[in-house]
Image (cartoon, rainbow, N blue to C red; front, side):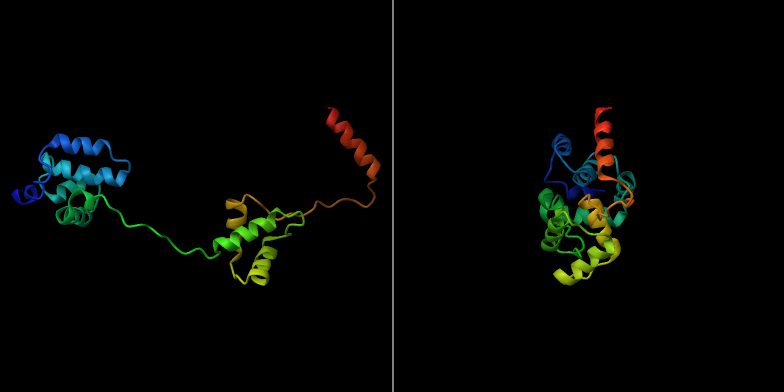
Length: 167
C-alpha cells in the first residue's frame, strides 16, 4: 500500500483530484483520474481492487499507473492517435464519384459504379464497399427510370398532373 501511495506524491490532496476529475471531457480521461482518486482516498487498497471497481483489466490499470509514474498526469492523459484502417476508395476518388453521381445521367446499378471506378479511375473495389459509400455516406442510389407503357399519351399524362396538383 505504501508503495502505491508513494507514486501519488505529486498530487497532495484529494480536492485537487476531484477538481481534475470534474473538468475531464472524455470518459477514458475520467477513468484514469478516478483510478488515482480511488488509490489516494484508499477506497481501493490494491491495483486489483481498483481495476475491478473501474471495470478494467488489472494490466490496463498497471499500464496507466506506469504512465503516471514516468510522466505525471500529463503523460497519463495523453492518447495515441487512432488512425484506423486505410480507406479502399481514396478521398479524391470519392469526390470524383460524388460529382459523377450528381450528373443527370447517373448510373443504373452499383455494379456499373464499380465498373466506372475501375475503368475511369483505376480503383478496384468490392460491390459491398461501393454500396455502403454511395448509399449510406452520399445518400444516393443508382437512377433507374420507371418503365412506362408505349400506349400512354403525353396529353393525358399532363392532364392527370394538373388535376393531381389541384387536389
